[in-house]
View 1 (cartoon, helix red, strand yellow):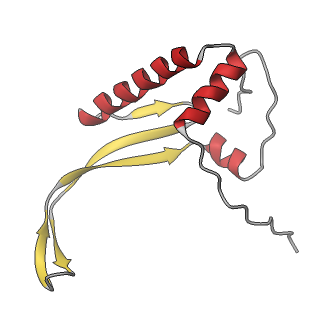
View 2 (tube, helix red, strand yellow; view 1 turned 180 degrees about the horizontal axis):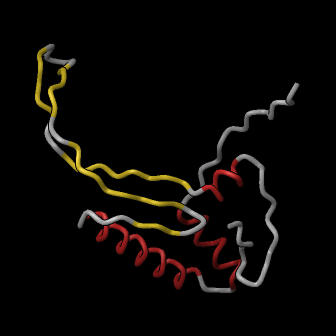
Length: 118
């Protein structure tokens, strides 16, 4: 019989925490890291706005896809409605993050900072 892991309530870290942690670990000034993070967010927004996808190894793959309009139900007015066509963003974590989340991987610092799993 397998031993089940105790469920842990997830902690959500803010952008501010991430910036402070990068600055502390890498020896940068907070404002320098902030500029880089803001630039990253701006670049990601531009790519997504233009319908492009993003793949960042060890973290995630993000794709934008089109959803056609369809018939739906308006629960407030109690009548059928047409849900307009729109773009959706799909975010998928990498196998690396899934292994880390499940405790199937231990961090070993190497020259690049993250051991290559593949």
